[in-house]
Image (cartoon, rainbow, N blue to C red):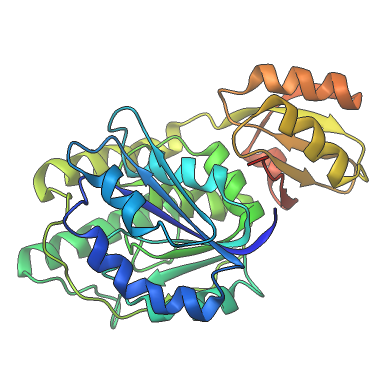
Length: 314
């Protein structure tokens, strides 16, 4: 079923903060109409009671989904799973603590009327000010590295709130490789290479105690992931179809394969069913059903196309 909005919440060891975070976002969900919005919470292999608390906190929502990774894979992997399962035409990714004021969510959704991405930005005069001088300095240094390695002009790549149209979100999730906290940077890097449009939203926030980010260890991992972006070979299985193939026919074919997060990328001469790197067998099945041709596509072949999410059966 197609909905208007999906909120994707990655969570790792968030049992102590989930309830308070949800209380902050609940009034916004009511404003959006809970019957037209869904919440997908991805438990990233937590070692505490996050999974149980998530079920309790979201129990009264008409559209909710709680899924769990068997092991802790990282925030990027959790976000990609949530985007692959989303059915809202517009998606907002939020941190479990709701440190970003949820009142900005409707503004993000409005920005998506005219843009593919609406990333939140906590930057004031180009700088994100944290609760300590060391974190502020580290954040500013990391942002300079982000702009150097990716070419993006975004001043706050690590803001925990980001809005997407579902089609572009799906293709970013399918291509992306970074499992950890630098997933945001990879998404912005790929969005730039794909020619997606972006309209940042200035947000207010508060630093909530209990973050799972560890400045030393995670900063080094993020820098390593950042430096590796240009060296990745972004190549995914895809099926080449006629340009004007009916969306319903493609959805029926991909649903039968139970592939995660497929997307239809339309161009002037053809349409491509883009799948994750793990779904090569699904590409064969879809091609047989629809008379297409299996191929491999990268970022350059996808640049400038129109992306339509293929919804999954629930």
